Image (cartoon, rainbow, N blue to C red; front, top):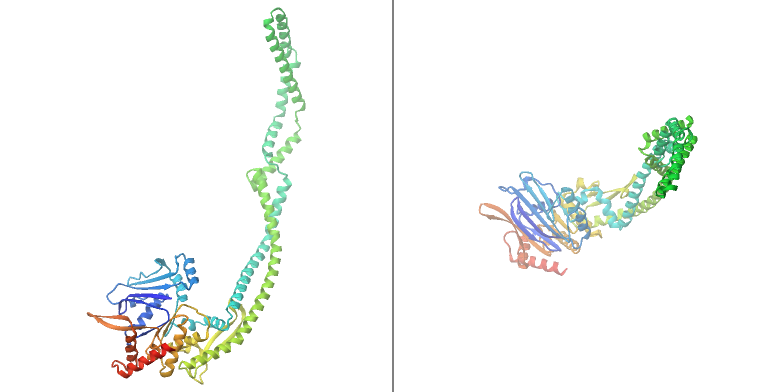
Amino acid sequence: MLTDLTIRNIAIIDSLHISLQPGLTVLTGETGAGKSIIIDAVGLIMGGRASSDLIRSGEEEAQVEALFDLSGNPDISATVNEAGIDCTGELLIRRTISRSGKNRIFINGSLATATILSDIAPRLINIYGQHDSQTLLRQDNHLRLLDSYAGLLPLRQQFAALFEQLRHSSLRLEQLEQQERDAERRLDLLSFQLEEISAAGLTSGEDTELEERRRILAGAEKLGTASGEAFEQLYSCDGSLLGHLRRISQRIDEAASIDPALSHLAEALESAYVQIEDTAMSLRNYATHLDIDPSALQHIEDRIDLLNRLKRKYGVTIDEIISFGQTAADEIAQLKSISHDRTALSTELSALREQLQQTGSELSRSRREAAPKLAHALAAEARQLAMKGAVIEAALETGPEPRPNGMERLELLFSPNPGETPRPLAKIASGGELSRLMLAFKQVLPERDVPTLIFDEVDTGISGATSEVVGNKLKKVAAGQQVFCITHLPQVAACADHHLKVEKLQRGDRTITAVTVLAQNERIDEVARLFAGETITDSARRHAEELIAASSRA
């Protein structure tokens, strides 16, 4: 609820702070005292248009602050927190207007946008008056009011959830169908690529091995010549190295038989002979088995060419090509699953459409039953609020396609006088009638839509017994919501739990607006003034006292 309102430099208000209470609070005062200015200031808190014309003459900036207690409205606190603004039970909205055009909005000290304010403020306050009966003027709200009246909000929410699920699944199906069309072309490409890579039978590191084998085969003739000549020089030709070494070894062996000191040298020569002989045999074997088949070299050349083509297409290394093939195989599996997913989603959509149709039919049937009852109940309430000839109709129309809130559109039609064709509320109802119609709604609706309600001009065109009815109905609403009412009628003012008097005072050479919280005896005088005018008689005072006492007893 709204606990504090501070206004600075708006119209004739220089600085005004009001502490507010739960229940029914009335504001009274002479015409032009500033009551409507206070409502305009609250309108700024609700996101209303900020005009420099509102700034008090001679000032450069105006400001409005409103403090709300959200202890009973955790959903609003959650919305504020989701917007990135810390909120733990109290909400302070401050709005400044500057002649320079630098207007600012602050929520709990953080700079905020008009979008955030417009999302939060309508959940805090509703103003019903000449220019601000948003709930009734917007046709979109009429269906919600009917659903609230008939207790259909849970079913409506169920329908909305199914509608959103169906919408989301339909979009997903469109995506899958497009993907399926694109998948055919993509599958052809991927299948070709995967087949090409698979057919190559790649082995990690084989390109390095092939390059080494190609180098050997390309030099096979040279290698054969070198190894053959080396064998001959070491072993088989006249004057071979091993022949010389054998003769030398035999001479040293003979010398060692004379001088044993040469024995180790003889052994070293024998060992060298054996090693060189082994080397010579290895060279002979190498030359004998050396592959100098041109076809083998061509096969390797072809294989290297194939690998190089694959590298240009799929990766710099063999490992990258293999990885590309695996990725292609995975994507092929995914693409082939699209058809299965589409079929499954189509089946799911059919079931969702059937659920939506069933839920929508149930909602429509209940709305058709409830709509005339709501219209009748509202008309009965309106007739108690000085609209004796009022006719209210609930025009329920089924659309060709479902909408998030159901299959229907609803528009409330109103005729204030017998014999006149009911027309849309926004086109025919006056500000006072709208306020009273909203008050009528508050009598028949079970929900508390917002914590704080402001009724302006609710008593326009009524008097006598009807004004007492209006006051009692306002008091009834105020049992569950904080209610403010600007009134000129003593019968309405007498029903107040709290009474604020708005006055226009002279301070120096400037006019200002002041607000006084009236004590019990001051309330009696103010209600008496509403009866008698400026000259308050004893009779008017007694009558005021009786009205206030009767309201308290009620």
